[in-house]
Length: 623
Image (tube, rainbow, N blue to C red; front, side, top):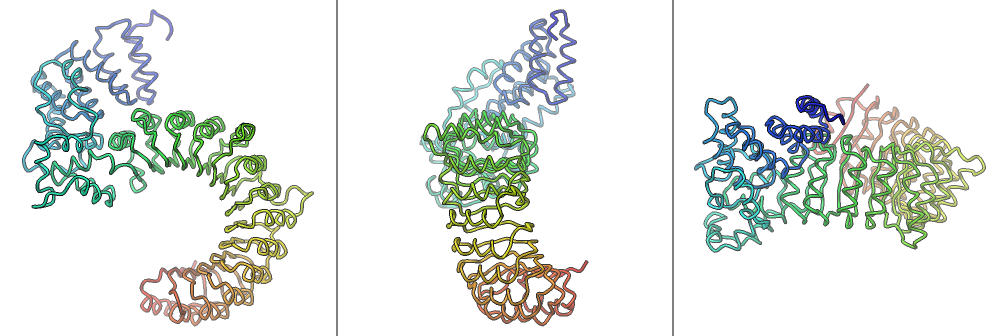
């Protein structure tokens, strides 16, 4: 394409092909070359304006739309592109002016005239200029709904697009609609009756609206023009945005609209599982300079690149404390940049990011050399390609580290237990799916003993499916870590009732015990646990063949705090024991009971229990 003899038509065809592949920047470069050769070709401006719109460069799209109108005043495409650009910029009145001009210039017989008329009518109804309008807010593009509202008198009639574009900044100040209303005596009188026959101050309305979830806020915006201005134009209502319930519908346009509403006041943006967001969506954060952002979550997304995330966080992440990027395309380079830029970052989630390795955390050595401690407190590295080297680096440079999750990291070994012993403040360590058989020179008991001695503030320890866990190692853990409240030794076949005795004796705060599929656990261990663990509220003893009604009897008598019980696949459990614990247990009543594949529990018993405890969440399936 560097050959100057290539015709503008050839460049146009190549640009259209790039556009169909969503390669907007490449299409813009090709169209720019074509325009340099033929500045009178309206098709080039048409396609480039559309590419600018899709890449978030709305001002450039306006410029191309203006040139397109000059070249072909009766072509509706220029007006349509300009109207969309003004809407996405939040300048609703300028968009109305464009559509009004288009209705005069474009022939009604033109195939695209109906599109102009439809856009104009919907936008006019939204601004409240059509009486008794019943247009649902869900039918209006979110970018339009986010626009501050001002009077149509501010946008005078005109026949030239260029005059509208030049007056845009003057006609639409940066102040929100609510601020505009407060600063105008005439507008302030419109607040009378904003709650029936009562007039409430804007501050009080803001306090009321602040308690409402996002769907309710959108419905409130349909009540009246005053309410619409106070909702859509008040940045204070859009500082904490959680789009979790709408993850499949969130797009770049939605993100842009939300960011325009909140502006620099945006503090929290949560968009998990939003697969339609691309790098363009992040440009809105940069454009609005959201430097107050403290929480950002973008998970399960394969379209946003690690470079784009790093550039965004570098520009606006100075106050960022929580960043969750699970299952995204981040890599070592982007993580190093983020750690270097976001010095206040305390909560980082990189789960299921295979591009993250030990190299991402080598930057911690630079922090240590400069005597700057890293602020990390919570780190999720599940299913990443990290090894013991990462845990060593963290132990040397993160004195505030509290929670570490390296589950399903096959290169994590017993050395990590030794490394974590230097982090005296560790409260949670998750090691499920790691290689605790290496290195051979260190025994598992010795490694766990070193860890327990150094981390006596530990509250949660998860090491499921590890054959190395023994009664001795559990005794070491319970003896030093007396603050334990959760342990997970699921599928640890070597532990016995002795391990439960150690935990119940030394850990008075123990409340969650997960020991499913531990065949050497018997009723004696469960009875001792029920009698001594007074805070026990969650117990999972599924698939243990030796558990019977004796355990249920002890839990019925002593498990006053127990609310969740899982006994799936326990053949010795009968309906008598189940009925007793559901109906006769003192203290808190059971909330969740899982008894799948328990042949000793008859279906008639289940029917009686459902009638006696209608609020009980019970699962009793048979496979």
